[in-house]
Image (tube, rainbow, N blue to C red; front, side, top):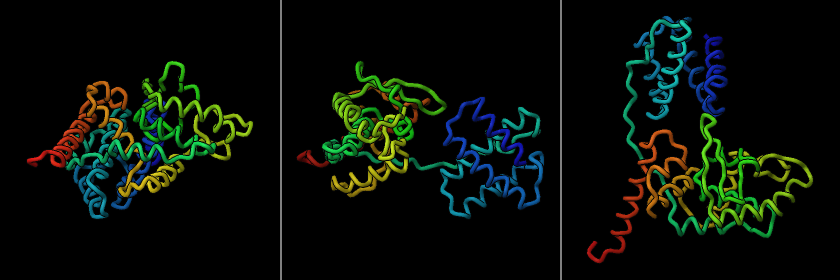
Length: 295
């Protein structure tokens, strides 16, 4: 069974062009599924029935996995069986008629405009690292990039003359996003001074590098963000995605249309973007409650 899994992972990597993180997630979930099947004596994917899959999902529930995580496992199995059917390795898809569990949607956490300003003001732009950090934070808030898109960005994806970046998103889909003047200024300063100081004559195609001249990692950026969050006096837990949420919500609050925000975020389905309209409404209600004399 593990041989079929490797073939599937090769297929989604090479033929479908899925992102590395997506492929890693598929591997993790499907290896767990195969281990469960082996533990109950199933050695062939043709033997798997709906009740076996129900037992697996119940096993995940008993281990404390959240509804969203269990649904991700089910979606991975469903996709895997579509491949097995196409390759005539399986005769039916036991996951085909199984419905995902309902998830209570939580509104994404966003920063206020004042909190964003405080956060962006934290890096010491007199130092190479501060110039880099300022450029990263400004670019993230200006464009709503995913953190992976940010840390993997190359200098070729940046066009400061026209004022846009070309983001390479999920499934290697490209999208063009305008950048603010503040972000452009921070990037120019970093490229002219900070980046050169960090590279020390070394070569790199990556836009954002560390002291060793290597690209910043997702974990590295997360630590940088946490440090500046504390310095800014923001007590709530925020992640790189919080700036993406804030970017989208603030655009909608200031009159941007939903379709444009969808394109900039790289959402394939506009319903994913629509949650930010709910956030914007909640923000307006909060302001109304705080400031209306009869609230």
